[in-house]
Image (cartoon, rainbow, N blue to C red; front, side, top):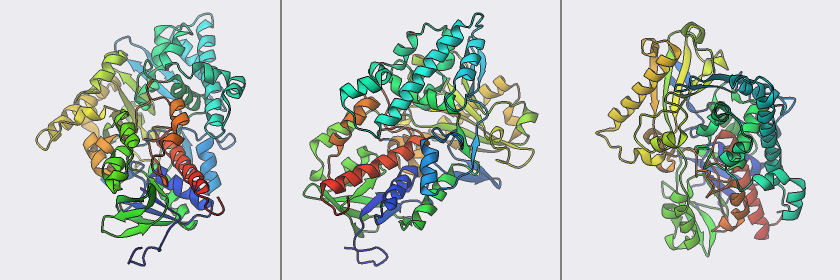
Length: 525
């Protein structure tokens, strides 16, 4: 029991971490009438869903685009969740899906999304970029995207509905048939020209694995969502999401404490009994949702240490961390139009789409030859003062790439990558970006780890791969609850990376806790 009456004697649940996943967990539990405490180590919620101010201008910290939003008249699951919880966000639709540029082949294709799950527009533009004369490429691309959509719809059903294998095969045949295949294996069956495959592979950077190692299920969900419905950003940046989620949670009775770190998760007889805070205080609860990586939780947060089952340690040792982030964010002294920047989002392979080589390069200190650039003002004209624009250039290296960084080499590594990125983009755009920089900020694996506490700076949880498949994750999720009363929420959970999936993971963690309460015979659950 805490001696400080600032805390209650006991809570129904404690959520460690007030980022998107933690806030989603708190909202879901509060909606069920539970008494919830959220402890967040920073003075504000959000984690990487944040913004910062440079030169008097607020700048987006990390969000490029959000999936699973959809238009008001065709809302997808994240918009529906926010609406259900009373979290009011002004969403802006990103004008295009992406521009894809291959510096080796000379490919330059601008792809726009469809609406309401219609894929004819992106299929036509991809086919057009391949010189389609008789419509055959268009129909093949359309067939592939429609297959993606059917798998996407199946995932949305199966993620919340238990179903026998025979019934799954009957009602979701495409999901079952492709579940064990990589994205490359499925794409190859459509016999598309290489240029079309390159364009259709552009999004791999946003899931952190190349198509030959990426489960088709993940690829299908990504492509169907982004190309069928379009992506969105909050008008007031990603911090609007986290702030409004936290504000709504508090309105629903959630106690949110900032500047408060949970160091230990207390366990007795195999069941959670509370948390110990960094100031030594103990808060009692039989249920904890932890936003820290299982790697960190199972190796340093569980008390006593021998309460960690052997299976939990095997679990974290078997996982491969997803990618981290290196980003150069600039406030430029002219508008996007004046600088000749016409696209919100561009994927650029200056030396060609040699994906295995690129991915191997992501395991080094760089510089990196597959980057994505974002001009925030082209989706949100009011993002910066008139006559300026915000431009970011990003790569997503592997966490091990920066393991040898130290005080002596950090600045040199950062500068070398930043200069390379700026030079590459300046050449592509035909404008010397260096001449127009008012403010510049570097986001690195080190700064991510320092700010969020994320294990090795990973922003994408555990890598989606053919060895660690979302289908297997769903089947094994119940068996991976190694300590009764403990669930995990964050990018490292079932749905994986991205801000939309983080919200979904938070909801899933809350559902796991509610199921545990029912198992424990808690009244009302």
